[in-house]
Length: 449
Image 1: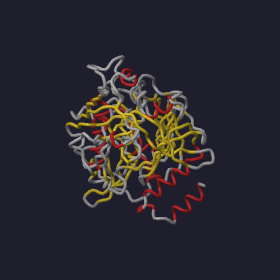
Image 2: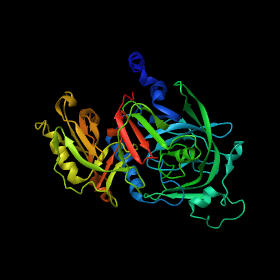
Image 3: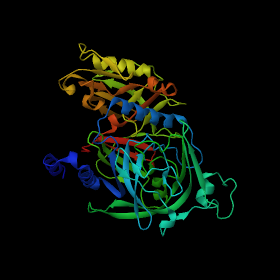
Image 4: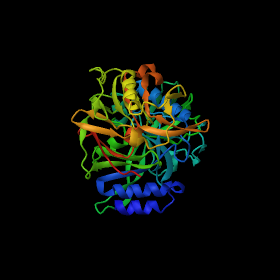
């Protein structure tokens, strides 16, 4: 199947048909998973020049959310304004309607803009997508969640404030940049593709509770890349994954295979059967996917770093986050890493672009000159990142440059200067598995094109 895919893709214009790319990805991953819901995704920068300013703005918004540490009892803390990197089309209601949502491993809640929202856009300007306001009255299976239902009382530790008969279960999410969303919970059907034992996909559905966003405030909703909402793949019991798992429909496991360069990929819910993936434990009691990073190897040399630099603590530790574009390191890690990489080509002159990016002119193959960077995690799990993955080309004043994707986290946020954040550049072209039943995460190299 892999050989036929490669042969077929070489004779096809994938640039003009991203949906074709995504469809093939689904077929490639079908034999790998069981009892699965499959969500096709697309990179939000697909088909657009990835300017340095756009990357910087995206990750700045992303880090505000991660560092905000605001998690009210409502099941989510995800900002779909500029923080999400991948988006998917899902179908909600009966009859089902299409909704485009950011797919985010850094938040829990599924929510979409609701009919009561007066400032929500009807079209995502830059992405060119028609947006839809969800109306529970238009769905024969849609129903508001009352404040005295178990779902609501569990979220609010026993009782919803000022609960009265027939009053809906409300929620509010606030963000570090001052924006927010208010709404109420509804229960309705979500439609998705599921994988059968003979490697075929078929339509499936399940009743889930999700947020109906009635009011947005601050900058939320003002972005030209606004979508209908967000689909969180976090660990909370309110996530769609947790709800499907508790109903016995799937294992509490999900995976993604993302092609950050070409813009395709999938998120798949369910147990991965093949290939076998080695894992590392998740750090317990953390709001994000924290792991224990032990050391970093450049080429064949281990970096000499402070022994406690990767310890998990308040605003410290290592987070795996598919929604961040690049990778951010503490300054005491960043400086020796860059020095070790550039020592393989000492004649190159680095120049700082956008007050942040280290770039240089080079016409050859970066893989032929620069070293691989290998992250070593607890449990002997490694993550190998090749030069063509941690470097990217861009054009500045009509000059083609190579820029280094490793970033100094202290320049992005003072609060995050001790945090290691591993984003899309290290996760792309890998099958990444989040095994929440066993509290572990793992990956293996895979052709996600």
